[in-house]
Length: 137
Image 1 (spheres, rainbow, N blue to C red):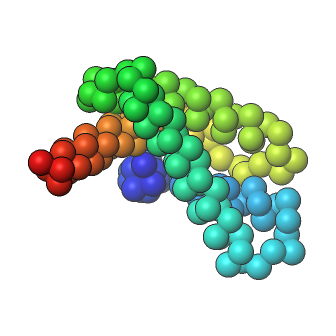
Image 2: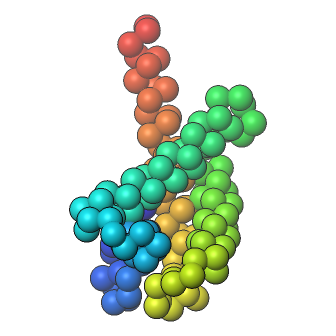
Image 3: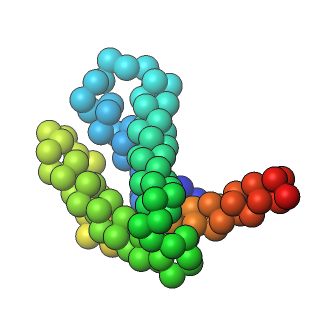
């Protein structure tokens, strides 16, 4: 997903990089932090949310709520993208000094980014199951 946002940033010449936006938000709330601490916090928050989304997917797969298929990965990605849109919109709205970006463009590219993430997570999960099956056989 991070690579996808980087690619979208280059293609559309806009900043869609989530860790940089998180760094900006943190920097404006806690300006006394060192630049390094702000960067680490931005990346940390970004990866933490990725882990949350992935953990939810695994929970759904493990408890057989949904099958771990590419089709369901696309559905999960679409739903996650919409949820990501809502989270980012609320974050920017609640922040006293949000970044100056084209919000419509930023929100729009959230959905394909989450679809790629969810499909990649689905494939990785299936590969893990295949690998575990091979080890126990």
